[in-house]
Image (cartoon, rainbow, N blue to C red):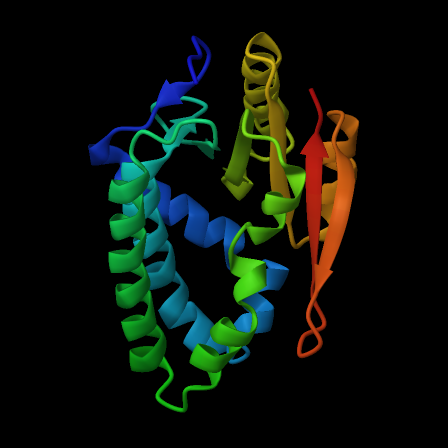
Length: 211
């Protein structure tokens, strides 16, 4: 995605990227459900997000509102299959590291099994139902709490929407926080479906903005 308004995150920004994601997702319904013990979550979440950041920086497009990274956006171009094998092996490596942290921080294996049972909350498998190869997928959208309610999230999403419109692409995303749904609906998204698993009181809202 090309954008004159967004800052392309660099390798030297990765610590700040991990920091902002950790702060923003500390109380997210997804991690609060899968990591039941608060102390375990506080220890574990930075490691999990570091694995995510490492993988996504290599396989996706990572943007911010500015070099200060007040808000961040991680995006996958699902129409680009040029690096599919490389991306697969990067993902596999980071998954093994993630499993190691899950077992290290919770030796009872409760959190590990929660992640296994809740795997459909952690991936975007639902998008296979869309049958649309020209598609952008928003993986993370986060704004530092100190800078929220200043329009940063909407500005970044409008850049994604403008890019999708220029290239005739669908946009997909998921959120586990029902409070986020009206924000995305305001931007023209609609709920495609809701993922619910029998072991958890958690809903994943799967949303799309069509061509």
